[in-house]
Amino acid sequence: MTAEETLAQIAKDVSVCTNCALHEGRKKSVPGDGPATAEIMFIGEGPGFHENEQGRPFVGAAGKFLDQLLAQADVTRADVFIANVVKCRPPGNRDPLPEELAACDVHLEAQIRAINPSIIVTLGRFSMNKFITGAKISAIHGQMQKVGDRFVIPMFHPAAALHQPPLKPSILADFAKLPDQLNEARKALGRKVVVVKKKEAVVPQDEKPQQLNLF
Image (cartoon, rainbow, N blue to C red; front, top):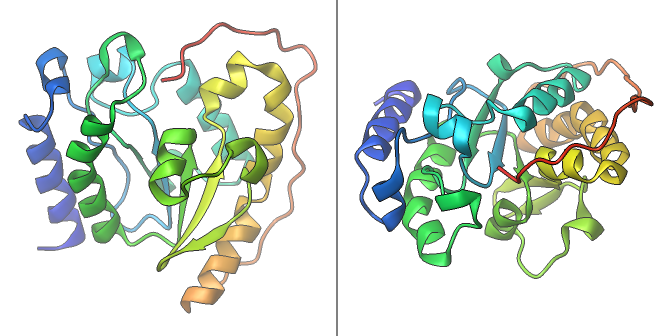
């Protein structure tokens, strides 16, 4: 199968998956979306209310902020693949349980193999812990690391940055580094390097704190 066909099959498998209890409260599964040729793969934590309704990742308030962050890095959703460590909404947006993470990992690993991205950006501590264990996201956010055959960049979850305004400058600065980091990964992987257009991180001055959940 082609990568596109593989991703389509994974989405079908996820829609009928009963590997853990999360399927019991599922309205729509959220396998993830984006092109099979994506060089950047974002991995979040889990679907929230709006994602469960629409079957697409990051469509709530955190998703709007993610779109702004992507624009700062001179990319759009059409350029990247976005997924989560669990494909069904945890009740009440609670943290995913170990058995739920383990059950969904087969789907996520299959997606990673099919896409073969140049870099993986983890959003939040649960996706970071899949690749980098025993670390604090506050200490290593924005720092690209080689994990096996993959380049991984841990970042704060967009919802956490909105919920805690002091985090916003850090996440803006981290996303501003993405074009350079992508080229660094491309070079190491023997892929085509692209000229990077420099862009400064801009922090809005009139933003007020928002109370948002972490999904």
